[in-house]
Image (cartoon, rainbow, N blue to C red; front, side, top):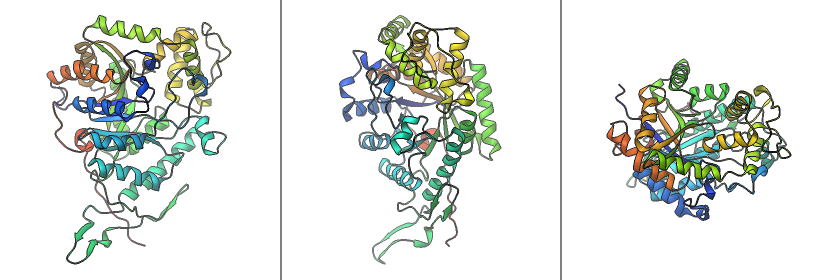
Length: 444
């Protein structure tokens, strides 16, 4: 029996919910998609539910295939999370930023600033971006090759961490009497020279309350998994089909972490889960069916075109999928590509059928039921040592958060599997992550 508590992230996007038709649901606050009030409500509900963190996904382009049928508004993640520091007190705040289209010095400053202003509650979800339409917004015709962008990403993160560590913890003196603001001997340039970046440093912001903001990765490919094992504190994954498979993957990833000389206990594995929750199973199933009825054929065609890398615009939604590229040939999000291509091949489903199946959970663990039924599923995975917790993909905003907190969180607390209150003040405290020590480079 595990003696630790599961970790929970409250995940949302400005799609207005993880179900792709969430914006059409009457209880979704669709018209508030550009209002801080909506995200403030989501943050406050999540903090009420004692979630470890609030997490926003982001991409750097819209999807032309279905722009008319899904919310394509993408509020910039770090800015939104910075705004939410003022209306929250304990919950962690995680935002996505791409290493492919930013610079390490800017990213180090951005997340260090957030960590100071939030009192140590910031996390960076490290992504490399995945689509050509993102590249084309930054003057490139095509996105970087999958292996190259991860190679570049590793160096990016190394630079960023060295910048965060270019100040010692006790550098600031504020000695008014002697007129000494800080101890200059405790700040050091990093003089980084790599294959992709040359950065002198040091950072012009002191070390933050967490030492380094928490690092998150979610790459599903073998290369993405190696990257996560090497550098991440938290790994968001697509759940395996069964608890047994999840446990095998959990053990494999912990071993990878150990092979890099890291403590596996300092690496939290949190698969995604999409919960449709009601007071009863019947109520939850009826809610899901309402959502499923809101899926338009055009939405399914656009979604599948994007994730499979093939143009389905001229195809009828009631026909089978045409032949798709091999996984090796695909340069986008390999995790979702693998799920969809295998689903098409094994189940012999039409485009419409695949879209309806995928739209509800997008490949993540999917649970429909009452609070105790959803808690049963989460408990089974956690107690079976198939995960350290879950990234809860909220189906619709803000009501999906309330559903989970009111019915599932309470049941998990009653079982002793989740906190009843925050015991610390930083995100590292919530996650049980150690404070990272700093070792300055020698001045040169």
